[in-house]
Length: 491
Ligand SMILES: [Fe+2]
Image (cartoon, rainbow, N blue to C red; front, side):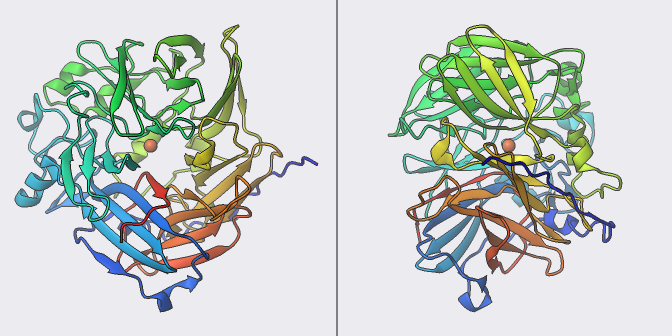
């Protein structure tokens, strides 16, 4: 019988503000080691084998300078390998020109998307942001790719994490065709879809299909409006769904002439509409567009379709104010209330025949980010969505909890990592021989402010209560963005 549960949010007094900030400090060392099994609390689940790859800005400071904006630190890949009951950790920076040259100089030489090169306008004028390769990492057709929204993917060796070089798919990706951090693997076809939004003078939406052998076999570029940002998309078995929020390049000349960073040049216009654009997954032709009152969001959840109907989960915020808190990751957020300002999950039901769109908040869910689901269900009807969230547990200044939404029953449950323990995106890992959609684990990297080190935490995905294993790393790991778990090992 279906039932619904309202999540009760904790309300502990706020203490120790700033304890999370060390979790943004740089980790400059590159390491490779097996973790001593005696230091692990709990037990690694029987039969759990595979590699968790994660990407994120590994250094938000260099020398005496800081990038400040969370989007600008250099991409550092971590690989956590589970093999024969043991755990191995490895990390390595992507050797982009930005990383290599700035490491040598020990100062900022490249513009970021939210950080200017210190030294004034002349240092920044007519320079494009450097590719930080810091947002996600994907393994497809044997190639490990570090992804960034505004540029091309960087290929890495999945065993050593050494940088191979920029991947343009044998020239198929043109000079103004970026490759986003939020590609989607289609479990039906084995194809990997991705996109980029960029173009001069008019922005274009570029869509790509890479087949299971790793060849870019389909590409289409088209103008869909003057939108300057699109971070994520969703797929069904037949369609691609893009949500275009009214964030526009407001002052291109100030960006060009070095007066403002790229993100400072983008303005959110609540007077305009947010558009949902549905494309054919076969041809990338536009099938239908929908307009609705303005909202802002980075991420989409899963989508599925049947006939002329599409259902897609979308994280929606009333404003783009969340960007303000990302502009200086070292600045404590005194009055930040994520449950007030953060995005909430909605389900959009689209009717391709009539053009009607029904937008409903997902009942009982609280504000969250980094939507996750069992990726075997990508493009198919899914029952569960997982999100990182922030609780008033004493240290509510960064993600410190996970929530699980049961779309069928309306039940929402949570795991609170506790005061001083901060997470980021949790990856869903299916249990060996899993029968049910939620038969598996959520694997997170958690920064423990007491220890000033990070730990890999495995939580039971069914009830979220138990920390099945807490695997201490030898150091902290700067907060990252996105990753993927693969049932393959390379150690
Ligand atoms: Fe993202």
